Structures are given as structure tokens and as C-alpha cells.
Image 1: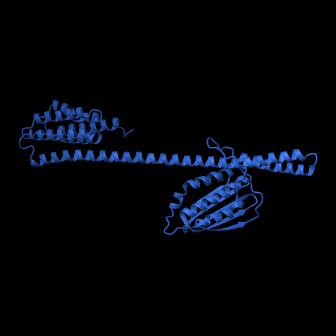
Image 2 (image 1 turned 30 degrees about the horizontal axis):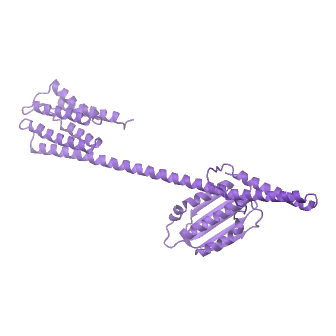
Image 3 (image 1 turned 45 degrees about the horizontal axis):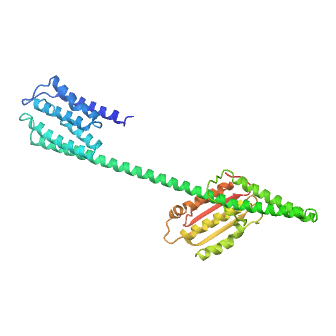
Length: 384
């Protein structure tokens, strides 16, 4: 790649050598300067090519360049090679630690002072010496500044990557915890169903010969309960439960029938919630019933924490699905993006519940302020 040091550094060294050779070929000696001979070109190689190794051996490269510079100035060749020293100093300041950059700066400044002093009379003047000093300072400060900026950029990238990994870890942990919670709640539903089956089977076995009608009713209850439990087991496919203990309870999980009691609870927290029900509340599968209740509960909890004083709940019992919508007003002096961030884990849990039922979820800020959560939970479809 073009940005790799093994490509960039030799390329710059080649350009410096080409500039030196072009200067030697184009500039004739004046004011007592020595004619350009083969040794001038040898010294040009020593002044240019060490840049290719300045990252691996900065002090050795600096010694070769400054030594060639002093010999070049002492002999008095034309085309003064100060730019090579400036470029090397910039490279060492950029790619080496601060101590080595300081050593390179001091050595370069001293060598340039000596090299300028060795020039024949009339070749250099005070402005030339000032230009050499300024070039040395600019090369050193430029490399040092860019090195520090690169270090800050690298630190910021590393910090952003760390924050991103932590965010992903928190999201995965939230999903895992929600899956385990869903598994525990589904266990309650299935355990309740199995308990009913066991009781009805005992009743049927006890009265099978003496009370055939009651035994038939027990068998019908067992069939209905078993079918419902099988539906819930199919909904649980893909949910891996690797930790946590399920509570040993046979009481059914809360459902949509408990929404009025939930509203009374949230009203004690200062939220005024109104419930609107459309459609006939028929036989809703326990998993859908539980998920719909939990979605309403989470939406109202977020409304208490982050929303205004009013909320509206719409519950629609359709032929193939139950639809839930919870909206709330904006809090005074609200930040429209704050609700989404604050309720991030709750929304993750809602999406997990809806996905288990094969439904759809929408959770977004309302255009006029506040928040809206809408979910559609089909009765029969499996996990999406």
C-alpha cells in the first residue's frame, strides 16, 4: 500500500536524492566554491538516502546525514543541502519519541550553524543563517505537533472503539437478561397448564366410572389446556435458557385482564392513563396475553419516568391478532431524543417479546412531542 512506511520513506529519500543531483547539475560553483565532482554525488547519497531508515534507526540516519552535511560544507560544494536536514528532522520528530526528537533538533541546529560558518565568504549572509535557524525550528515543531495530534487521534479512536464494545456488551447482556426473564414467565404459563392437566386427569380417573359426564368435562379441559401449552412451547423454540431459576408457582402470569389494575397502579405514580378497548376479548393465547400486558406495562413505566402526566392505551382484539398502542404526552422542557435513549433496554425487551410471537413493534417519538409504542401480536404465528 502507498501509505506504508516501506513505500513512503524510500520514495521521499529518492526525491531528495533527485533534488540534490539536479542542484549539483544545474548550479555552477561561485565565490571560491569547490567544483562538483564525483565525491559531491557520493555525499548527496549520504544526505538523502538515510531518510529511508529513519524510523528504524533514527540516530544512525541522523549521524550519516549531518556528517555528510559537514563534509559537504567543509569542501565547499555548490547547492547547499540544508533541506535534507530539515526533512530528516521533521521525520524523526514525527515518528520517534520526544527525547530523540530533542536530540535530533539540537544536533541539526548545531550542524547547520557550523555548515553555514564553513561556507566561503560571499556565499551566505545573515538572512541565510536566519533562514537555516527558522527552518530547523519549523521542522522540529511541525513534526512534534503532528505526532501529538496523531497520538490524540489514536487515543480517541481507541476510546470510541472501547465505548462501542461496551455498548454492544450492554445490549447483548440486556437481550440475554430479557430472554431469561421471558423464559421464566413462559415457564409459569406452561407449569400452570401442566398443573391443570394433572388435576383434571386425577379427577377424570376418580369419577370415570361413576360420573361419565364429569369425566368427559375433565378430558375436554385437558385437551384445551394441552393444546394451549403446546402453542406456548412452539413459541419458545430458539429461546436458550442457560441460567436462572424459575419460580415454583402454578399461578397464571398477568395478562390483559389485569390492565385496569395496572392502570390503577400507575395512577398512584402520578400518571393519568385512559383505556380504550375495541373488539371482543376472545380466547387470547397465554403467551400473547402475557407479552401484550408486559408491553403495556413497560410503555407506562417509561411514560412515568420520561413523559408527561397523561397517557392513552388502545387495545384492539382482532380476529387473528391483538393490537396494543400506548401514547403519552411530552414532559415539560422535554428532549425528543432523551426518551428513546433512556428507554433503550425496555425497547429491547419489547422487541424480544414481539419477535417471539411473530409480530410487529413500533416505538418512536411523536411529532408533537411525547412517545408512541404500538405492537401487533398474532395469535397463531410462530417466532419470527
